[in-house]
Length: 384
Image (tube, rainbow, N blue to C red):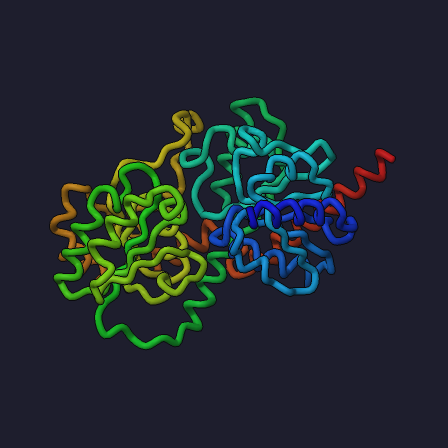
């Protein structure tokens, strides 16, 4: 009831806000996504002197405590469909796909919707087939996304969206933090296990086994849950808490709101999670992939005849093993770590060839969003 009352107050507050304070509405589902927006939001405020209205669906999202001049932060969850139907900001920036497909519809007002990615993954396998069809503009992380989106538009005779060579601020932040990381050298090698949340992921299939094996071999282990796992799989969380909560060699991490585990881990083990690209490109260290069943939300993805980026480079930025090979994971881990330096240059080359505006994504994002705001204003003037 307390949260609902806060929602009602914040919804009324949004509707009453002067337009100058909500020219751009940013929507985030939770704090794990909020951190993807912050660099871009700050760049918009500093570079273009434009205020932001930031809406989150997490009642304790730290953004709600943010007292930065230029940001009005509001909470909305249960009333989100009503808010979206009545948005009167000229521009809405979001990282939630499937606009218009389910309960979140486009506003009755003339709003430009911009999609910003929260992962470096391709657009056509792990997202639903029509995930981006109702957006006006998309801030792309790399050329592969542009190729995929244009091919999809061609196949389905869709109106062309405005695609920006943007980049990925989360990667920029991880790289910057890693370069400045002053933490002590690990007395024991540290392994980060960070799976995705799709069915039959590492935690479902082999997580207990590989964690036990790595600890027995003398490694420290960080178990980092995906935010959707925390939200949807209480049974899985309880199983791992019971197995490892009292083990001093295992750290269980239930939030992705900071990058510390990525910075301190000597190796990442994952399945099909997008964190593999953030880790490899941000720290220039290799990844061990366990080939669990792929996360496929678009059964027609092969019609584009484009191999997903994350699939194409999987064997180039680390090593892959099958599920039946996980009982022998320790020597594989040792082998990869011993050859990490040799893989570093390959990782750098793949990153620099494929990712836009590395180190400068927030400025590219801010410029593109401000251009959309100007276009919205000019269109509004023409319609007067």
